[in-house]
Image (cartoon, rainbow, N blue to C red):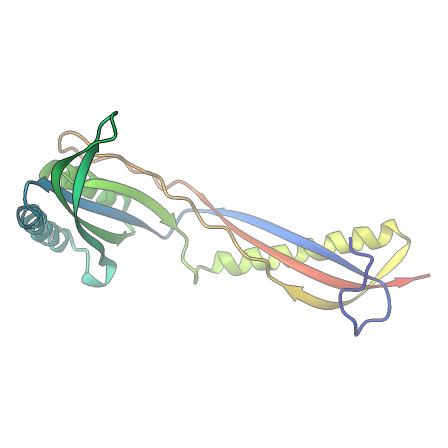
Length: 216
């Protein structure tokens, strides 16, 4: 409860509260990051290795039906790699080339297939999946409605606690939201579909609301 007036244009007492709501739902899609890397004596050889496997990855994504709009190359690097000794000396291990591709998927079975097949056939490193609930999912609006209702209930309770009557709403602001955290999966051994279960994830909303108070 904020007894101070947050708005110079208001002359009477106010109450400011924050309302919360969380709804659990299955995600709409997931993002998977596929990284291909190679360590060779020469940078050109390392890049050629990664380039060849990247073409194979493109062919695999085409084969399983991942459209080009749902995949993106997010980074390509070529750099010399060193091994640091206890004496502080650096010993060159060669040059490492790396290519990283992000893929958006909605079918858990396909996610598991890609994890297993890319690690086995292409020696890929996998990061993800990061499960997402799309911004246009109606549950996000429902969470917003429930958060606003929660704020009003809290404000009403605070008003009753000080023997006041809850007045008009003078301000609504959204502090921000939370994002789902990615789950990291390391390379699998052998090609068998990796079980992937999306489960339920939280759609959260929070709102800050200020109401006037009518006292006595």
